[in-house]
Each structure stands twice: as C-alpha cells, then as structure tokens.
Length: 263
Image (cartoon, rainbow, N blue to C red):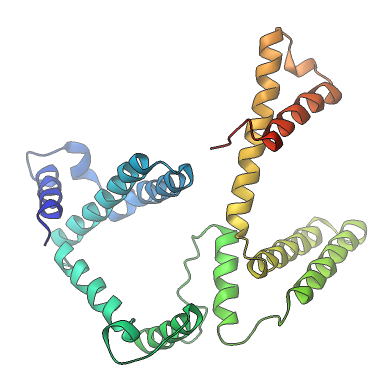
C-alpha cells in the first residue's frame, strides 16, 4: 500500500482507538452517510470552480471518508482498506480486457458495451436497470436509466424523435392542467422532465449540470436585486416586480457581456 495512504489509515486508527477522538469513536456507516454525500458534492463544486488547489483539498476530504468507512468495516471484521484496493484493482483489470488482455475495442461505445456484458455476468442481475442507486439526484438517475436501456437498443433513432416526444409530453401537461387534478399535473410534469433529460442526452447536454448552472444564474441575479436595494436603502419587500425585473435584466446583461462570472 502506498506510504502516504498508509499514513492516513494510521491517523484514522488513532482517531478510533480508546484514547482517540470522542466524536470519531461514535460514528457508524449510517451516521457518516450525510458527510460522504456532502463531500462528494464538494468535489463536484471544486471541479466546476476550475481551481486545482480546491479540488486537491476536497478530494482529500472525500478520501478520508473512504478511509473512515474502511476502518469501521475492519473493526467489524468485514474487510480492510487493503481489501478494497485489491478488489477495485482486480475489477478494473477484468473489465478492461481490451487493455489488459487480448480483447479488442476501438471506440468508447464498444468499451461500454463490453463493460455491461462483463458486469452482467458478474452481478447476475435480473434487469439491466438494476444497480443504479435510488439515492441519486433524480435528473442523474433518469439519465443513467436511459443510458442503460439505450445500450440494448431501447432508444430513439434520431434527436428529432425526442423533440417530438418533448412536445407531446408538454401538450399532455397542458391538458392535465386544464382537465385533471394536482396528481395528474404532477404525473405529466414528471414525464416532461424525463423527456427533457432524454433530449439533453441526444444533444450531449447533461440535464443536472444544465439546471445547476441555471440555479447559479438565479442566485446571482436575485443577489444583484438584493444588493441594489441595500445600496439605495430601500425595502425590497415593498418593491414592485417591474423594479426588481429591471435590475434582474441588468445582471443578465452583465453575464452576456462576460463581465460577471457565476463560479
């Protein structure tokens, strides 16, 4: 095992021993779940920031969570960090026969196809859709499900077909708004989201990334509204929509002019 990784494991051992940290000693796999999720998203934020030092820091925090879970498993006699490293190493070699054996794969699509074939044999699952975590953010989970189905040919042949599906689902949502209750609207809105995720896949646009960027835009633009009212000493709660919209549009123009970064 790499020396620096062994040093980190030793720190974790010290934190968990009888004279270690009271907080660390109280933790379990279950209690650490929120921290694991949070650290993962912080890594994503760091990637999007484009700052290598921040990414290095957040990857370290995520690695520490992995070491923590490995230590808990070792205490229970389940597995050690060495076992985890050995397992993933063997799996990567096994699932890349075009690199480590005599198999052949010329394109990324061929690699994914072979990966799924090998994975299916290993997991012995009843459905190709099994194994996608239910806890994934909904837009990411929808895309993963669509990708899995597409790998066995369940997919639209052309992007124009997906455009038509989006229009069809939008029409059904409008009809539900007029003629059905809240549950009907909810159902049709979900179908619209699914269709848009699929369209993004065909356009090579990740729906989750796209909506995150739009959220960032909203935060920035509304923040500019708040700053302007604070600067002028006016009460934002008494502002008209027209006043707020004018500031919003100025902020929007700054983005278009390239004078404001949302990162």
